Length: 294
Image (cartoon, rainbow, N blue to C red; front, side, top):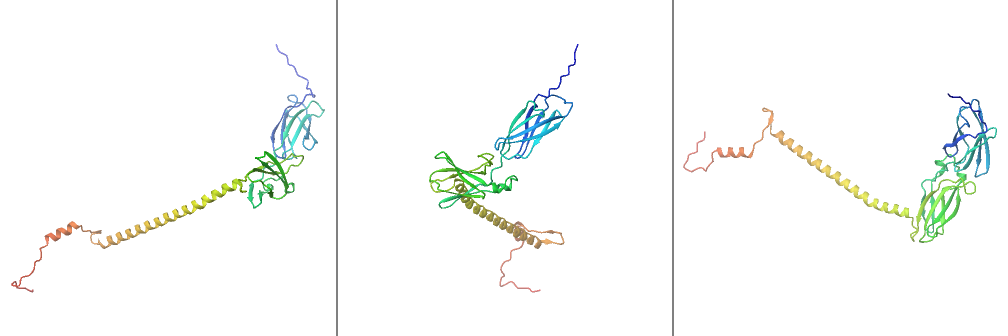
């Protein structure tokens, strides 16, 4: 025996399995399921987005009959923090999820140039790879002194370089450059970090490595060049000798070529010796032997 029971839909239940599918710099895709399976009519959802940094709220309305709902929330800020709440339009129980958007990338090619009494930090413009970044926002620079274990905020700039002075001899520093934080130290870009080793001479550790590699290259490159030149000259000499030998052999072969036989004729030293043995030896003439001239 069995009995079929149809449950009465309860519109006071919250949406199920609310979660983020994908989050970028300025958007997030959320997904949830209806409070009960196979809705027989359109359901109106209220999607509230609370900005936890700026303390602002936005509400969107989504109307659908699907059991599984996917919705994209746009116009978010990179590096922001948000609290997303989804519930039916009749203000039933809610489901919520916290989302953090992807921050802006770190500046590329951060380098240090050492001057007499200061250093200069250089980097590439972040606007070259981040369409959401405006140069007017600027960058902020921090410095960490590993000897004192202290981090200092050096300031911000809208340029792509920054001057740092009053560095102490023998201290190791780490510099970070990132897109300037927008609100109360939040919604910042990813930092680009570079280690600076004073070494008592004001020399950058990375710069010294580059210098050493440059010195090695200055020695290796000429040596390799000389080896290549020497090999090239050797190949040319061998080629010329080969051509000279080939030409000499060709000339020698042509001088012994018999057009009647169609081949070249060479005589060995043995043959010459045999001919000399068979030929009569010429002796001197005697005075009493008459000379006959025919």
